[in-house]
Image (tube, rainbow, N blue to C red):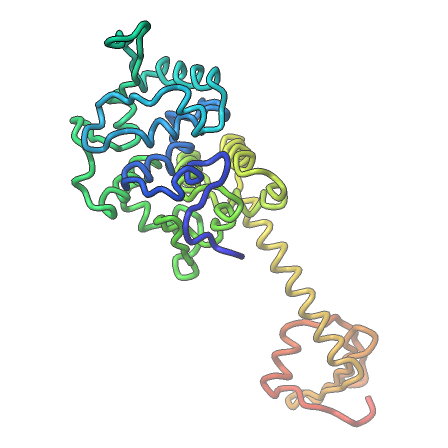
Amino acid sequence: MRLVKDFVSLSETAMDFLSPKNFPYPITKACTALPHLPAFSELPDGFLRIVLRIVQKINISRPFSEIFATRITIAEESGKSIDTVHRAVKWLEDNGFVERERKAKLGYRGSKSPLQPTQQFLETLEIVDSNGKPTTAKTASQDQHSHRSRMTGLSTELQGKNAQDCNDKPDQRQFARIGGVTIPIDLAWLCDKGVSPYGVLALMRDARAAKQKLSDIFQNSKKYLEGLTKREIYAYISKLIKSGKDFSNLSKNSEIEAKNQEISEYLARKTEDLEGRSFISKKSGAVFTVAAGVITEVRNGMRAVRFMTQSFIDAITEGRLSPHRGNS
């Protein structure tokens, strides 16, 4: 599996807009997280590029200052029509994320209506804290840790106990570092398909709230996720989380079936390898011959037939049965 080491989103996602320009860390973080924040779950897909462009124009030093970019500029930069920009701005305004105040243009006819980010908008994106203070004073690692914890509802304890959250044994758990986020390596497939690491953490949170484990849900649904877009994958898993099914039992049953299949295949291979060979018990003198896919046992003139077992293989390995060339 190819692991995504740096979160790169294209077309419909945030990071498409973060290259080649270098934006301040809080802006990069906000754009990366925005598509997966619950507050923007109802944001129409066609507005995402526009909203990201607006976020990029926030002044980190004075985040509450007005954004004077014209609708034409935003339309050109986002590749959307001016009408779509107006509708996107209206959505932001209706949801309390921006405010507009029409102002007369000095020396010109008409007016202008710059956008002003609200406390709700900036705090949701963690550009400011609850007191309205810019978060740039924090280090990147501190800010990133705070962002992950708040956005996904996961505590530091949850971040350190991914094995418990994903229903895997701690001594067998492996992790991948993707986009500055540590997630279970079995879930890295989701990132490889375009789901952001923050989106994976959000799904982990939702699964945990539903008393499920995301790894169980993923393993039982992976075959249905092939060919879906990242948004479809996220929506499909979200639906499964809310379905009420007990994926832990489904996962356990699948593991048992897989293990039984593995054992059956192993015994079939050993039966084929030992075909035509005979062994004698050092203790009882019984002779065992492997032929036609079964084991024929001759003991005290009596014959018995049975299938290959692990105990028979162990007896050969441990020397309790030795090769026999006599007639049976």
